[in-house]
Image (cartoon, rainbow, N blue to C red; front, side, top):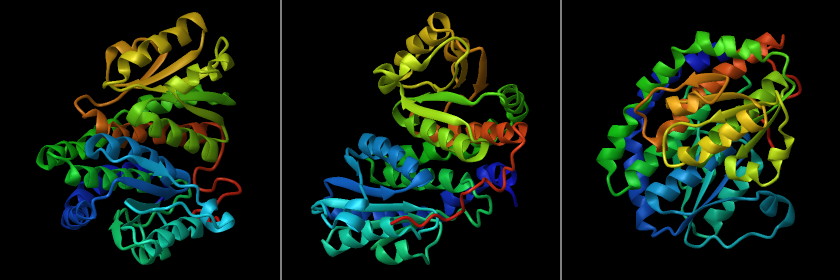
Length: 346
């Protein structure tokens, strides 16, 4: 199975995981709540780090838990460990093999904090180091570029948030909408391919997101860098306005993730300025006509997905865009140069 097949597999994977993980999520949620955790200390690298950014928003919003992203070098190189009492220490890694992420979890356990591994490999060093393990159950991922393991990580994070929320039944009902929404997003592949092929000559771009979908901007940019070798620069929209907007000149490519929700009204004036005042070449991904109408090109997202779950859906068209752009630029989607499936950092 190659990259394209793994992208297309995601609706079935999400349906399967929703059922398979139901029995393991609730006991972990109860154990965390019994520890009276005050914040989350989270370690991850690469794609999994972007899942951690999603966790900052969803655990912060649904569970009122602040999420701090760890600096693993403090644990592996400096030997100056933060105090982790009252923390839930979380490691996210599809392989579970990165030593620096494992060391953060191990130190959390030495300090007596509850520890959680979110991984696709329950026999990994990360899982062995943690008190609790969430197996994302994505199955073998053969492509170097992570796609289905990323959405599976997001799903595990969202399921845990739902289980710890004040209204778990309502949140779980919303989660049940996700597989069909992802299937609907995949149905737009032909249009996404045409857009990507039209961008084959681009050498750089800016990718904008905000709120929950800041994680989508980060992950979309990573896929473009590692597969299509495009200098893709991701920003949260407010940060972009604090200086980097000076990059924009006529015909500069800007990709924007702008589904409906609490931050859309703030994004719309920025998108209008980018196109009408600064002349950017704007691709907008959204489920809302008022956002899509601003861009020269658009990718329509399925309607009706609650904002907190839109990153699980929006990343899928972004993956397809990266796949088709890579092919249009003449590169091998299965073997990105200089990188490997598992990267073990210290």
